[in-house]
Length: 78
Image (tube, rainbow, N blue to C red; front, side):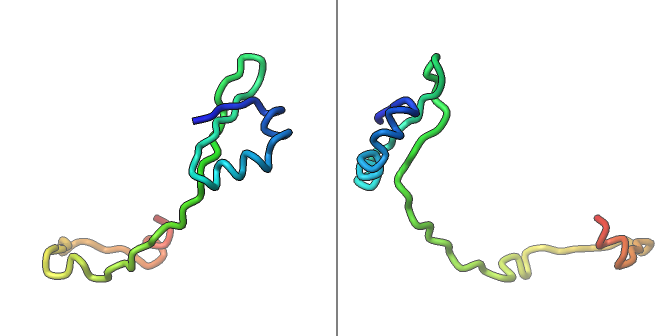
């Protein structure tokens, strides 16, 4: 991983983006103490799996007590 101060990053931004595109990570250092504050990493498209509905059907049992009572308004204010 490469690390650089903000001024150097600004001066070489296009070159840094080319490095990030090729898979490298770049740390950003800030202030006189040159503390790490951020990291530029390559972007990867997330693969979101299709969500299954009813995955717990038949596996979970829900039981309410006889004295349970809740209005729709109470439910919406939770």
